[in-house]
Image (tube, rainbow, N blue to C red; front, top):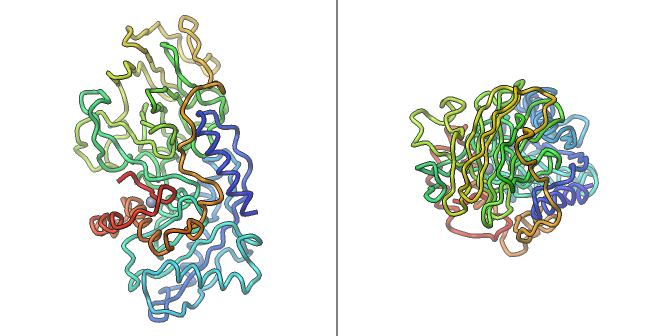
Length: 444
Ligand SMILES: [Zn+2]
C-alpha cells in the first residue's frame, strides 16, 4: 500500500515534469497513523483533549486535513485513519524532552509494530504529536519532503497540519517574487505568497494552480498551454463544476508562467481574489513562486485586500510576452496574452455565459498541451520511492535531515507567532548542511 501511494504521487510528478499535462490523478487512500508521545519529564498536558482535537483536525468531516485534500484532489486523495480509534497513545518515550525527531519516530514505530502495524502493512503515513514546552523545537511542525513523516507540536493549527502534509506530497514553500516596473527582468524574493497553506496562507486558502498541476489534481483538460497570441478565459481555480480552463501555462524560455483566477468559493479562498501569476523554474511546478508586481504591501500579508497582488498587466522583455487582464468577476476572468511584443489583441468580448467557449470566436483557439512538446527533461525533485524517507537517502543522517527540514516549518509558521520568533535562528541551521536536492525544501 505504501509503495502504491508513493508511486502514484511520483508518477504524477514525472508526468508534470514533461509538460503540464498530468493525467487525472489516480485514487489514493492514505492511511495515517497519528501517535501521541510523552517525554518522561514533559507529557502532553491534557492527552484526552489532544486526542479529541487531533481526531477532528485530521479526520473530521469539515475543516480537517482529510476534508482539505479530499476537496483539492477532486475526491481522489483520501486521508483516512490507520486505526479505528484514530489517534494512538500517548506512548511513553524513554527520554527526557528533546527536539529529537529520530527518537520520536523510533518510539512511535515500535508502538505501532507492537500492534502489528508497519508501513507496509497497516499505515502509509506516520504523524507524531508531542508537547514542545521543554523539547523546544524551533518549529511548530515538520514534514518529510516527500515522505511519510510529520512531527507536530501539541496545539498546532489545522493549517499547520495541512501544510506539513503538503510537504509529504512533494510541495515546497511557496515564495513570492517582488518584481517592480511590471516586468519580470528585475525580481527579488520577498517572503511567502500567502496564496496557499504552503505559502503561509492558512487552511482557508486553496492550493495554487502550480501546486494543483504538480500533484496532478488539476485535470489535463483544465490546463491550457498558451502558444498563440489571443484572449483566454479562466474559471475560478476552486469553483465547483468541471467546465473550462483553470490554469494557463505559458512557456517562457526554460521556465513557465502560470496564470490562475482565484475567487472566494464556498469556504475557500476568502483572502484571494483576481488573476495571479507564478513563475515556475524549469518544469518544477512545486517550486513556483508568486509574481507580485506591487511595491511592498502596506498591510500585513494576510490582512491585505484579497486582490492586492492580483495581476493587471505583466510583461517580460526578454521573452517578449505581454499579459493584460481584461476583466474578472465571479465565474470567469479574461486575459489577453501576446508574444513577440506584438500588439496585444483585445477583441470585444461577448457577455460571459457559463456555456460560452473558452476563447471568443475572433481569437485563435488556444492550443492544448501537446505530448510532443520539446520542453526540457524532468527536473522535478520528486524521486518517487527512493526519496520518501529521510533514511533512504543514505548519505544524510535523519537528524541532519530533520534540522534542515526545520526551515520548512518556520515558513509554515507564518501563522504561528512562536515560529516567527525562531525564524532567524532556524535559517542559520538550514545553512549548516545541504542534504541534497531531494530534501532541500525552500529556495532560501
Ligand atoms: Zn513547511
